[in-house]
Amino acid sequence: MSRGLGAVQCRVLGQLSEEWTYLADLHGPGATRAVVESIRRALRSLNEAGLVDLGHLDREVSVRGAHRPARRAHKVARLMPPPEVLARERADRARRLDEILRRFKD
Image 1: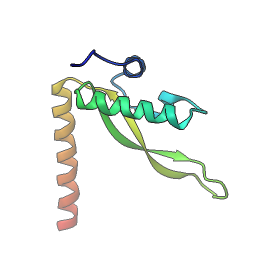
Image 2: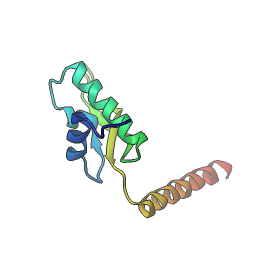
Image 3: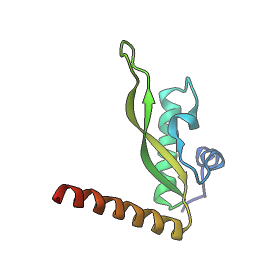
Image 4: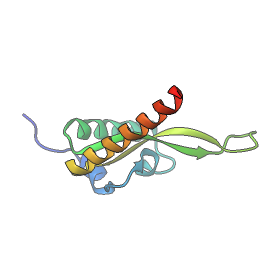
């Protein structure tokens, strides 16, 4: 039987909003591997409970020796938006995918 949310889960929920937040912004600079993994586990369990939405966004990072920044996918999280917002986002993604597929067919 569950005793509710844990300390890390509560802290993560307090840091999130309905806007996407990078995982690196949640744990801050200089965090140990243990802290990063505990936040990742908390996010995964909150996602399974339907409280948090998880995803990936591209972010520019500087690469030593490179002339320009590289784009890397980073893990992001946000509070679960209302169902109508999720439905609108899914419809927008489907519309964009249809447009891309039509371009390739032509």
